[in-house]
Length: 400
Image 1: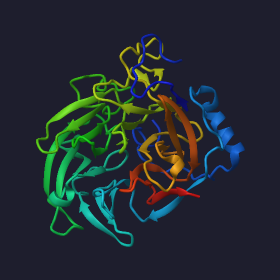
Image 2: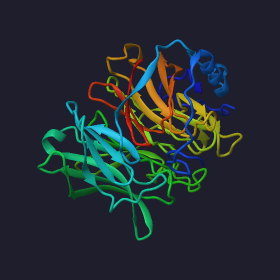
Image 3: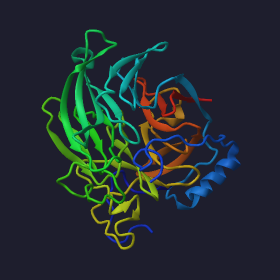
Image 4: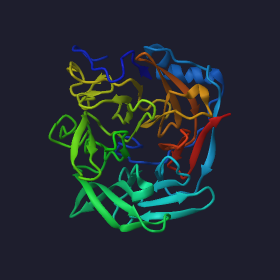
């Protein structure tokens, strides 16, 4: 993993740049991976870090064996290909789990029931499906929530962002209440993005992939007139859409730090780099001119002027990795030493890392290795973090 001594959101200076697999944003889609035993002990962890080039490449220190031990606590299981989870508001106690084939399920601590079933409308498989939901900040009073899903109409694959409402029964949504806010045609069946999330400004943010294909063949991410390869900001009432940031390949998962309001994003790479970005309005994050900090199109002599480089990156296809899953800045109180660190993972490798910021210098820390296919992270109302395993379970990150 390369971490940069660059202030969050800093743009690259002019001059030369530095130097299809499973998972979100890859041609193989979301697939199972072979199970592996967890690494144990500082020697194993150090060897793994060396394999990544972490100790040699980082601009900030990588701490090996210096952090207290963490573990995962199983919260719920039995879901069918879950890809996202969320709570309804600050006081929410029910966990809403999004299943890729088109259902939203409620877990209340004991039972699981279906809240919404869109399976007849959703085209799922690979990277397609019902991919996320977001509750309106005033959900308790207006019962409004929003989803992001893929659907095929007349042979054309499209991404939909739609509003629904809960019925008089709080455990059941009204499937007939759909109001479409945004439709984006997808030229290919992958890189669909997928996350819809409310920002601290009350707008709805939508991560939209570049439309698929290798090396963004239609140059969507760098095309200012295209909504593909962009971070979109949508007004939840008027459905007005604006391009908020650009230059993404597949911004599968992102989040806002509840303390600072900064957006952190994991952008899934193609063959060489998985990256973490701090996203700011109006910035261009480089794809497909660059993949992470590397020249991509062309591979030699690209011009990074005006582009914003990632705050951290790691090599794709090393030790089982394949696809970054963006997470959250930890703001809970059960793991005090983790407060303020950005926690994220890899879908195939099952690793979980944390990034620490010290005046614009970022340091990477390996938290733990798992046998999970980490499709998403979720944040509890109290700031504790959950991991969503595409294999069917939801887990809480806790002290050992």
